[in-house]
Image (tube, rainbow, N blue to C red; front, side, top):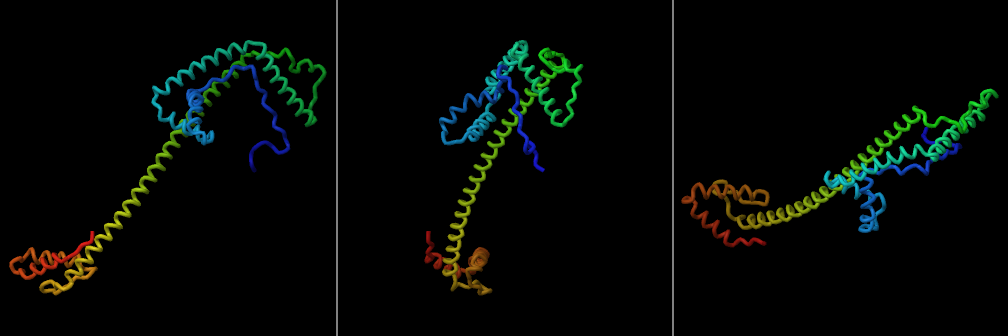
Length: 265
């Protein structure tokens, strides 16, 4: 069974505090915001994800010194946020927002109990229902809020690390593609060169076979063919080298044949 929101139920909108201070940006996000328009102007045809991919690769290649400016800005932005958040939590606007959250939660619970037929509120307990005089700044609530902020900071840090890793992986993939393409080109070039060399070698064998076809080897009387020309030439060389004085006639014949050979360039 697929997960997700149950069919037939409407998803409730999350209550958002529009008066809360703006959340801090990480160094990587500040780098993206600063460089995005520049990349988009240089590559207007690229979609947003491709622009982010390019910037992620650039960020991964940057040295720590180059990144430090953005990281310092992020640290100052985080300090700004902590101060503004502490000040905001002392305002009436924040108290009103927390009250709305509690009221909304209470109404939701009451609605569920009403639907299930289990809403039973004694008259004596009506005054105990959450109202305006709710203790907002309890120690438990403040600790919970600080814990949530710590979790959010850790999540933002983790998300930034994943974005950096994705940028590096995309760069590695691109480098691998370029290397494979280069190797393929070199392989095809080498294959073509080998083919030309083989053709040239076959041509030399054909010329030698035709030139020496009427010159049998001493003793064995072997004459060359296209298949045996390599062996024939090796044996002929050995005979001449081992007994040059005894094979003057053979040497003269070889010289005469070689002088009449015609190799195509």
